Length: 192
Image 1 (cartoon, rainbow, N blue to C red):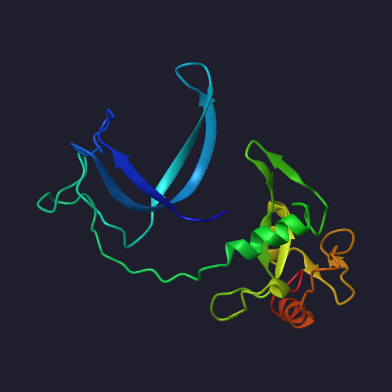
Image 2: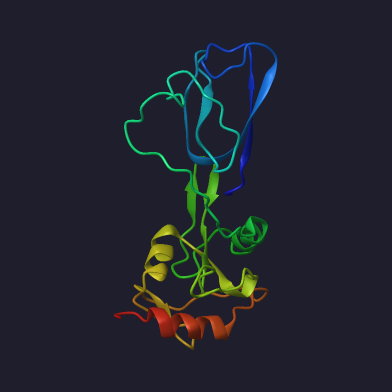
């Protein structure tokens, strides 16, 4: 769902990252990938690939370069500003559509449950500065999300799809802003 995970490490593990005693807080991480595999006892074990979020505590760990070690490549501290999306809003919208794409009706079912993506009609970032509101969000499958983001599919005034067959399905409780749709057509017209 895009929410960060707090990582706390315990001392009773055979890992160079475990503290000597007790527990240590390691910061916030994002879940980049997940999968399952058989564990030692034969039961299904879920595995997660985590990536530490920027501006988190960073302790030197075994195998990492220390400040006195000549770096293999130049290092630079950076600061990242990113737009924080309302993931709760996206989850509610996906549930409203039962995780079905508003363009093709496809519902993807994965090991962790149904999957769909929230796509912004008017992008949030500069220079578009779209609002983070339900009337600016669509529930799409990954393929139509990419096509929509890159101008391969546009939505007409009558909700017909240009670049795909059919019309955009809109739930009666989901109002979509005609202003955002018009903005999208003006800036990402199909074939442009």
